[in-house]
Amino acid sequence: MTVTLKGLRAFSSVARLGSFTRAAGLLHITQPALTVQIRQLEAALGLRLLDRTPHGAEPTAAGRELARSLEPLLRELDQTVSSLQDLAARRRGAARLAALPSVASGLLPPAMARLRATHPELHVRLHEAVTGQIYEMVRAGQVDLGIATDLKPGGELTVDPLFRDQILALLPPDHPLAERKAIPLALLAGERLLLLEPDSSIRRLVDDAFAREGRMVTPAQEAVHSGTLVGMAQAGLGIALLPSTAAELRMAPELAARPLGPPGIHRMVGLVRRGGRSLPPAAEALAEALRAEAALLAPPPRRPPNPPLRRAARLSPPPRRAG
Image: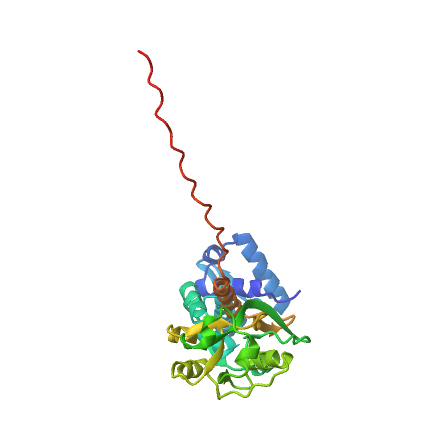
């Protein structure tokens, strides 16, 4: 016969309350069932732990020694179980996230606000990084989740699609190219281009697109942050190429934003995670908030054009009744 947690809790309750009846009520079991649990524990230990007295129950010398050691252990176990239940119920915890700067400034803030509204005790620990660094941080277990472009990592990493956006050209509205609905790459190649640094996933997309056109681009200026490029475009230093979901585009409503192409330059941004691993509850809650916000980025369905108004036929007055 083995010592069970149920038997230890039964003994601890009787020793603390000095009564089988009150202990049975506290544990929500019958008194005979409680007696069986105590007897099984005594049999497993080979010791008598409780003596019945006219006033209830009293621990033996061995029982008092066990009770002294058992009480703090059960209290610590209860606290651990309660803490784990809080984690499971998403009442507390922290999600470790690595994200592209363009996503950290655009999609992430409303997703964090959504998470805070539903789970106020959950926290997000953010690391901004480029795609290659994000993959390595997820692979090394330094973060629970990453938000990056899909590089088809394979192996132990998976990427769940989150949203798809496109690269836009940001330029003054009086620029000749602003008259176009979309700007061909061949025309952009001769312009002063403001591009993100070479390590960024957006820059790689831009360079690859120009390479497919048989062109190499030497940027007029490079920057780490999208906001820097927006400021340069506002100052008339060139044409900035930025993703359509970047929040920094709202900094310059006076600038024209035009897609490239056709066919354009698009990117798929996804949630990077270790394959075959369960996310911690806080990270799973954050992923749900990110998916909900990403769904709002999808363009609304086009409404069918209103049918032309038909001219109402002129009706002649009804004939009068003879009468």
